[in-house]
Amino acid sequence: MTAPIILWFRRDLRLSDHPALTEAVASGRPVIPVFLHDEVVETHGAAPKWRLGLSVAAHAKALEDKGARLILRRGRALDCLQALVKETGADAVWWTRAYDPDSIQRDTDVKSALKEAGIDARSFAGHVLFEPWTVETRTGGFYKVYTPFWKALRDRDPADPLPAPGRIPAPENWPASDRLDDWAMGAAMRRGAEVVADHVTVGEEAARGRLGAFIANRIDGYADSRDFPARDGTSHLSENLTYGEISPVALWHAGQRAMAEGKRGAETFLKEVVWRDFAYHLVYHTPRITTRNWREEWEAFPWNTEETEAVTRWKQGRTGEPFVDAALREMYVTGTMHNRARMIVASYLTKHLLTHWRIGQKWFEACLTDWDPASNAMGWQWAAGSGPDATPYFRVFNPATQLEKFDPNGHYRRRWIAEGAANPSDTALSYFDAVPRSWGLSPDAAYPAPVVDLQAGRQRALDAYQNRDF
Image: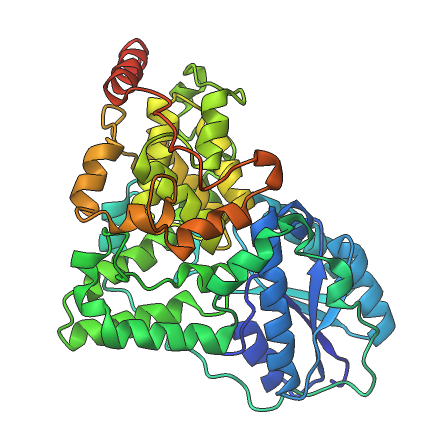
């Protein structure tokens, strides 16, 4: 058994706790790590594609330290893999399973064609805590509500994280590789890349350091601080989970250890890790959640689907509502957005502006460096009221009162909004460096008046909901 194994990396750009890599190295056969700029990657928005490129570069360096190389190819996944099999004499192609519809379609086609050609095409666990088909209700179906899902998982114990391999067996001859720079994965970010680059934490080593710092310094107060966007109260690990720079199993075990040590916020943190699993559970069992209303009765709801002036101002972070605007500006400068702020931003678009959640979902897909296909879809439908385990349709978050509650001293607003400030912060000014010049925005302009009166917008939403047959 001397034929190489092609190890196809995707959103699993790490060496530790990587079942496919561990088994490939244990086989003693040469391993050829590969990353493909394929048909799924082609669909990524500007910020996630740029951030993915950074992760690929970091992973390539980590592989070199283990005596390996990361081979880069661009094109349809099946075509690239078939070419690599022919060039290298590999008789196996292994990868980590994905659960979103686009990835499943791609992987199904790849596996079928390779197996037909006599290639050992095999997928492994590693992207979630528990495979979606292994978590069932007592009647044998899938979970549609989070709390029972959490209760079903909280006492289950995923296997301990796997260690990174020592050396990775190399083939006698390496196949040719594209140059990452030639892919220009950050081209669509334009000048925003330089701004956001100051706020990313890239690679497996950095992700593990981020987890360690969170467990040591912040997890105890996590439950109390995580809803306050001006505080450094969260783990910030969504960015690293998105690209598989750290595994959910590593987070789970770190959280369990913290809970055993009596750290108060540990269980809340574990619930958030399981919330991500819940998103993939739903995407796997009901893939329509990524593009259509999960609750089919919402298909007839009269969402606005046009690029109105109000929608444009929402995208620009110029709605006249400080919580909404600060959150969107945080996203343009850092590539991420505080979770409480995401709820407020989504509620405002779908309820006060009665705009289809798909518009917001697609905008986040373009702008978030921690974009995740499952979490983004479920989060937007949760806020809109059209999804499983959704916030009730009659709950309309008031961004003004939410700001008073979760930013009582105005720190978050001042951090991200420059207009009207005598001495605007550097972060607030960075927004004007990150956004397109075509928007024609200046920190010297007056802060915009509200797009909609909050009370009137709330009442309009309630009237629309109550006129539908839910």
